[in-house]
Image 1 (cartoon, rainbow, N blue to C red):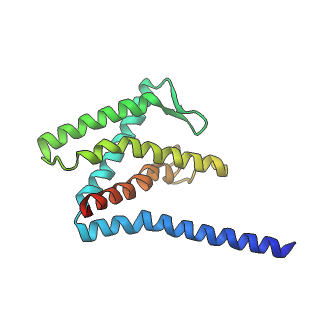
Image 2 (cartoon, rainbow, N blue to C red):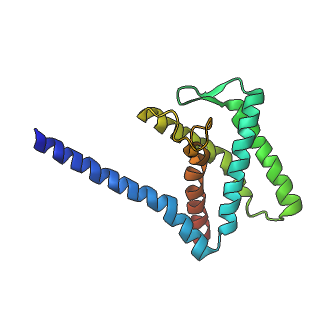
Image 3 (cartoon, rainbow, N blue to C red):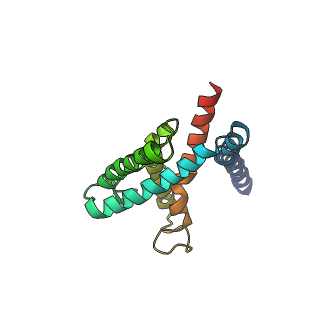
Length: 171
């Protein structure tokens, strides 16, 4: 009956609203608290730069050397070789950067976890797009699958790093 659908739809809407609020808290509030009150802008900046470096290196290495798909059903063009070689090159680039340019050893842990978190973020976004039947998430960047493809790693990784950083500082 109509009443049952309305109640079920209302429950789904309420559940989705609370899920959205939780996501919003994790995505926005934690990084803002981290930057504003704990003076950790450099942590978040190195996170974003490391994500871009890793994504670029993984793409280039995957195109050049990729033979084995990482998750064929979710992201058929993402290769294990791309992720592994991309991570190695990211580590080398940031080792050189931290050794000679920015002498900061407290940021190593961020670069160490970026390849794992960025890959998870990318795969989660790809799975979400496949589940709802969307190939591209926009037309702003043709050939890239949309803006969400450029931000998927950041959307997952930045809040996670900010949260870990909060835990490290507070405890």
